[in-house]
Length: 556
Image 1 (cartoon, one colour):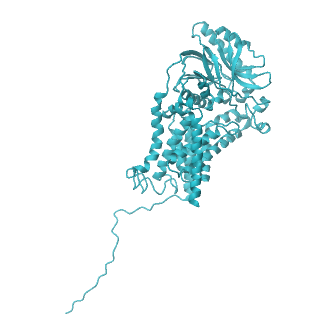
Image 2 (cartoon, rainbow, N blue to C red):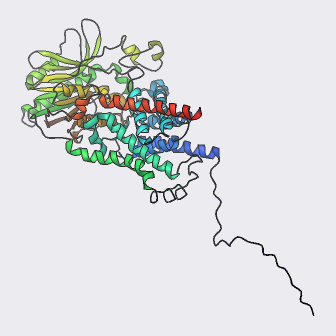
């Protein structure tokens, strides 16, 4: 009996898997592009939604974070495109008051045109952010680039248009205090730095990678927050973005003790006249007498209240912009009568034409005995309104071409008027958006600031509230109380810490009387002047140059 031996071949097999592994899928190129586009549109609109009059300071860093995450490690061309879309989504609703102002007569073209031109500068910021995003410590350079683009659009073209700076979204919140150190420029940089740090965090986590909205690395992937290079296992990987987020917030909180509010130069009682104006939009263009008469009537009511003992006598009275209108004789019997009856000087805004036939938008100290006194001439004239380039073309989008046959003449001296024993720093309306008006006034000894303005053109839009936010920032920047006198509102008394002590409503006749602190201390921002702006501009331009050199070297 024979035994048959059977050979068996053993084939190795993979061990059984308890759970099937999912197939990782990433969006296709078109879907990824669409998702990124939707993200920057939403972020741009969110930046508007977080702007005054809404007190949502924290939205601005989040909006910049989305823009930064989308442009991170992309080409300059892609960064420019995403930046333009982001800017347009932000500025179009923010500047909606232009449509309220001009839309009935000129359609949407002035509104769309200004928003589109300004969005191009944010496009340049996006391009620069994309270029520098591969450099070490990228959030710092990305923030510097964004602020540099802000500075450029605040100066060009036609004198620039600073509306919509990141700093102006921070009229509340921890980073407002940084204005006392480095002005509006430092506040914008802090917002952009926190946002860029969050963008770097998002990028390293793979939430918005090159593969689309959710990158290949994934939140919990090999390079994600909890992966091999994650926050827990590789903390050094996250040090820079976390620091970029934390430093602006903690620095802002740490700087609040430096924001003084004490009346170290005494106090003064002031009255602000808001005589109101009809809500006519462009119809107000030829109604100078209405503005004058309304404010004279409101001032006469103040005089009656003071003489009857219902209101304490003020040390001086602030009128808004464009209340008066005077020629070379510089006379206004009604203003002189009010000043004489009260026995205190008036600070009055008006259009003045001197013997040289040049028209000026000016603020005048009206003395009870001598009348027309010292004046401040507006430094930053509104393009296509007070100064009109390309007049024949401008006629298609601006009614001011026919209203003013020649451009107004800008001033070049800081607005410091001696009134009631104090030095009053003055800027007119549009001036408040610029960094070179109130800082120099405080440096020349102004202990109180005033912003006379005429916002009656813009109806019930958000423009007056946006401008009030700028005044709040200037208060912290200079360490001075700020008086806002508006024809139709919003008039306000702003404390040196940016808080609003009193304010009026839109399109009401209302006088404010308040005791305000006078302050002589100079803030760091006043001492430094334009140094922060130029420092960040050098950093931004230098980072772009370094990124270009690095890219050329790696491609050689």
